[in-house]
Image: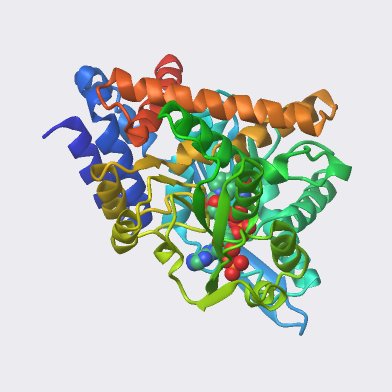
Length: 444
Ligand code: NDP
């Protein structure tokens, strides 16, 4: 049996009932196979793939907090510090009822290669809790964040592990987490990114993942002789990534006609009204039915179905496995030419295979959504310097980083005979840098 297959079997046997983690590792290993096979015996002797697929540290903890009725609630907290070969652990915190160790490990594993692709010195980690911020009062969210940090603070630090936001963790939650960290340690330092501008945050961090996705998609399309201007785009999600992807795509002259949340989706033939979307989601924290109420021309559909809307480009920006094989077939039938992932692993393996086999361009989240973490690393630099850069400066750096990532991914795919396969390109380019650093640092 080849070394790659041995490692996949081992991962599945040693991590039972972790389907999302298996999915991420399977996709990764299948694409780096040609690199491993060039030097199989050396990789096997050093157990490099076993070390890479085993987190350096997994922290699981109890989060007890008191709700507005005086009732004690208990949630599960997680921080997986996956790989620190190229820098301190870096990756978001997710608060969502679906969070479990499989999801945190898949996200942490992907984060290693994403962070490597940015070219910045950051290792891979991820964390979160099975806490649902929906329907909770501000004070409940604050007490939960404080309880979460009462354990997490002993495991993080500006040179150790620097968490950020993810699903369910935005500016409000980062503020409460930062406040509690400062109270517990007495240190005012860049231990979290995605902070507010009044206390060490970076301009353009809020926009970074969505803008970065569109910069990446635009560069990929250009390299294939296609102009994003005038294209019809379906976006899923209505959170941080989706909102700013819509904003940037519309600025570049595309017509974004959909967005969605966990209960339904909007089709707006006039193009999604970003100011209205921000008001509904960021200010009022309401459902998309409120968008429809303010915009009679738009159509609201209950449940899923965003990919049935005809488009040239699909940008899944909500959550993992939200675009399945049937969706991929529908997109193909409607003439879609590109799927660019904004979320982490939003496309199932079967759908990804179908998309690639049918000549639709596909950009994996670990490359196309890397703008968020890249800008988080820029926030870390500003915190270390105790300086703040202008919006344009950060945005220009973000643009350059996304363009560079695309060309590195493209070049790696070509070098290994996989031209146009941006999944292979991203995994190979991300892997080579981490593997090199791991080899240089010995067996640790
Ligand atoms: P948000 O919480 O801001 O938004 C998530 C959106 O997706 C919301 O509209 C939410 O609906 C919807 N959603 C969440 N879970 C589900 C579900 N199970 N089914 C259907 N819809 C769902 O998160 P982000 O925008 O920050 O993150 C979105 C994705 O992008 C995630 O995969 C995340 O890991 C990834 N990502 C985020 C980065 C960042 O910088 N924020 C960086 C890189 C990747 P509702 O409004 O009803 O809650």
